[in-house]
Image (cartoon, rainbow, N blue to C red; front, top):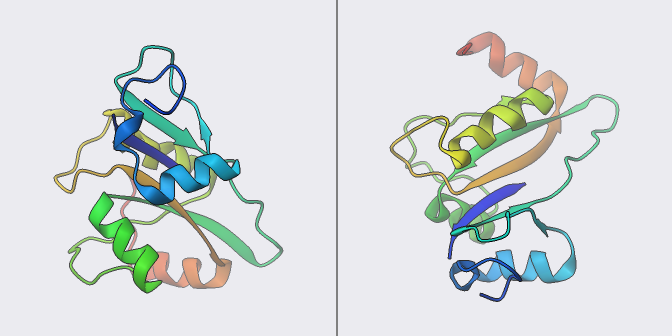
Length: 134
């Protein structure tokens, strides 16, 4: 998971006071690491990608704080998003992180990239139904 938060409890980063409680907890536990550059005006937290077991794959979803908080509270994505993007594999993570770095734009203001480990067959079936190549 990568997350960008505006906001100094993260050494060398001026913007850390804006971290959400779950971000602070994951950073303190070592599950996330600070990848921000020295004098950054925002915080870039990241974790290693999971290595899926046989028959499984990883997909990534860029999302904003409200969507992520809903996911954390209800263990499901909200039905308020008209377009639920999922992008598969290492290339998918790199693509999803472009939204955080400002190289891609969408009006939902993504601030995190969330990783899901799911059955590969499910993703193959979903992508057969609808897949937008970019």
